[in-house]
Image (tube, rainbow, N blue to C red; front, side):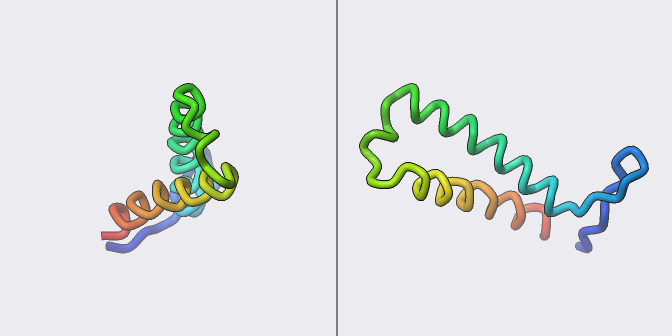
Length: 67
């Protein structure tokens, strides 16, 4: 399958940017859930951990749309 640009109100947007934004929204939700349960205080480096979670969330999105 070929991924093409998306026409968003007359502006062509790269599909990767929409995937990045979707993964960012999911990561924000996961971060708030983790913060409410106090899970982030058990992590050595919270920013690095959240970056890893972002990459884990982004990977299935990209792979599912690329197939």
